[in-house]
Image 1 (cartoon, rainbow, N blue to C red):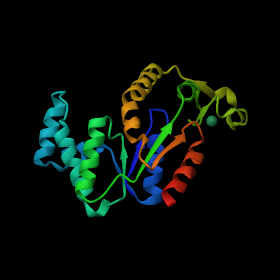
Image 2: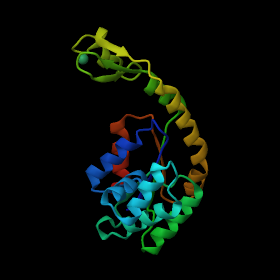
Image 3: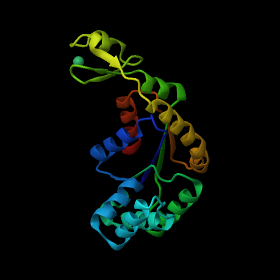
Image 4: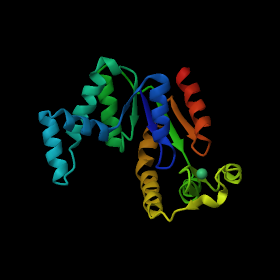
Length: 213
Ligand SMILES: [Zn+2]
């Protein structure tokens, strides 16, 4: 199956994508990775990409689409791709439909990890790191673990993280910009919305159930 994984920053999308790769032997397609891999291979397109990025320019949709095509075309990954962070808009979603159809495949499944804003905020703001053993816990979600932490809970400190605002801004931007993509896929018969506020392991179990059907 080819799967599109959607979800705002803070929904745990990256973790779930990696688990799918590990448990189901999938290929995780992220456009950033494709671009980096192409640069590393020192191909002609790779050099062009490097040149564009070094000048602070965007890589064109055509280049990205070509890289996606060559991945979909690769028999090694046939019907085993997770699209992570792509498509970002409806134009890309339509294009992707065209590309998979061209290679006699389809998008079999769409998984949207939805997580409310206040949960994301707590996940970021509640983070505490132990000065002794470096473990990270969350004051909202790991109340018991914090009480029982072997080093002593006084070593668990919150760090003032200036990324808070940036992350919340990224969350808001994602939800706003991705809404049309969600609407585009909402009528797909295999559109699954999962509650991203659940524990990572619970989400993973749900995804396994869906993938094993
Ligand atoms: Zn500790």
